[in-house]
Amino acid sequence: MISLANLPPLVALAGALIGGVIDARTGLIPDRLTYSTIGILGVLSIALKNVPSLAQGMLSVGGSLLLLHLLTRGKGMGLGDVKLATCIGGGLGMSSGFVALALACILGGAVAAYRLYVKKDARTARMSFGPFLASGTFLVLTFGLVMVSPQ
Image 1 (spheres, one colour):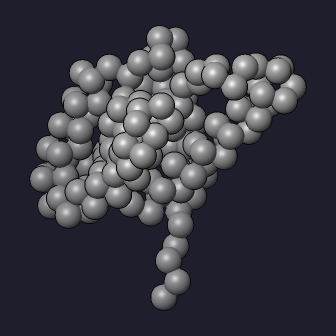
Image 2 (image 1 turned 90 degrees about the vertical axis):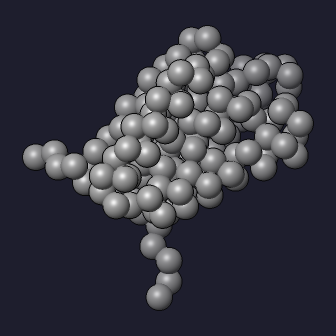
Image 3 (image 1 turned 180 degrees about the vertical axis):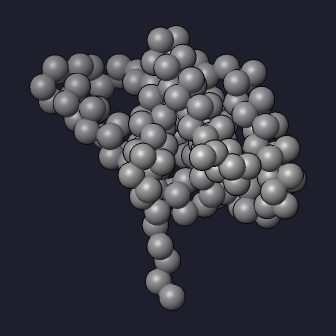
């Protein structure tokens, strides 16, 4: 049974999956999608009285990709990926959001290594990160992967 408390992760998953598919096909994640997902998450967090958790997840997960975007001057990560990660952090929370992000990096790195060494793709070949963010989010929600901090 789906309760109101279960909706934020499901909204984040829906946004990530739609964004991942669009990113794989077009190389872009529409602002309309990410902003509406963030808005829905905001309304849900107010209804659930969970605004600090939402803000913490959004700032930490989205902020880490924003830092990467700024450090690489936009060549390592697009702003669409940053906004999608912000949605994921808001829906999953900081801990699970970082697990989803780590899984996305592992999956993306494996595919990049395959493309580079097996297929001999050029080093300048572009690769969308949105599908990997969607995959990491899906894995976290499917298998309940949560990073637990030591007590």
